[in-house]
View 1: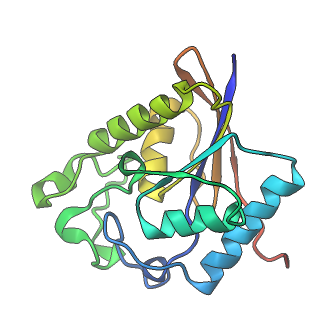
View 2: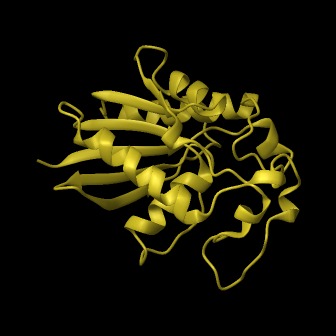
Length: 196
């Protein structure tokens, strides 16, 4: 039986606004981030998408986004496996310090030397966590709120040949899940210029 996963990035945070590396540390949603989450919630509502279950990273910015998207009308589970990439000593520093490798699609294991995770670490825990979620009985249509780096590593594992066009806040990856396999369907980006 085919199941559907909506894997979503959280709304804009103070660190996003200030161009800080966020990773495993946290910062609150901005007013714009709250509005973005409301827009994402309206997308689901307008398209008649109802969730059997919902999951969030344990980080505040993801939990707050999920609560806004579901209008606080849904119980959900917080899972550490959905947390953002740990960037080690780079946490809280300027995004200008991120290593730039024009021919590489990820940071590889760069952050391991600074107490963080490699892209393979993040990919493995995201895959394991999301597989466990989708294997549960009754989890046919699922919302999982996570983070930019974590969502991106999962995307690269399951859609390596699909061109990547960026991941704005509250963007939603739609996947189908069947027989232990995730199939990328689309990346949904919102028009935040519209009033809600």
